[in-house]
Image (tube, rainbow, N blue to C red; front, side, top):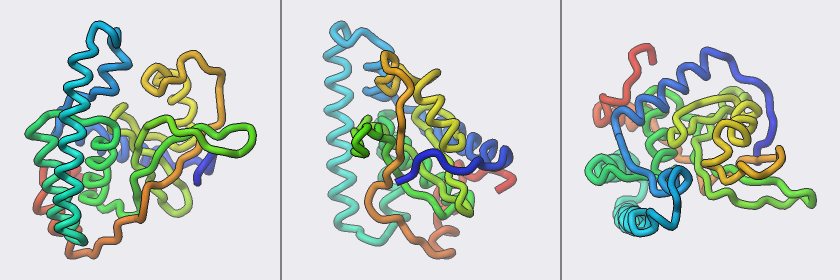
Length: 210
């Protein structure tokens, strides 16, 4: 579990920010949860419901595909990315998955999809239903949030979640609170050969100075 940890260099953040932008340019998508945060829920209930139904079906198909292709990360990520591109839909979970693909294509391998949570006064965590990519670079973790379209050090990201992005996080009516990040499942470990295959599979995600 990660909370407020050491600052990351501005060069790293700029590069990570470019990754978030590249993901969103290469894979434009409609987000049900972002749509819900920006619109009147009652007026757009049917649209939000249909979006969530489509996303749940996409996730089911991906889970089924992944279970039949265990360990083949190139095939899994290509299937996921192709479906997002075809359907043009994706919430923060899909955005974090795409960010992981893009990070690995650009040589960032110490990364893992994680969840942002509230830390309560009794040291328990409360889910905010928000996924990001956590990058742990030489003990200086930072966040790539392709759903919100930015990257930043963990302390700065936590501040931004509770200020400029508070509406999307469901925190617009809350005082500043303690946030933490918890990783999802096991980290994917890939070889240099797999990384090269990823570059061949996702050339649109390569950033020139990577």
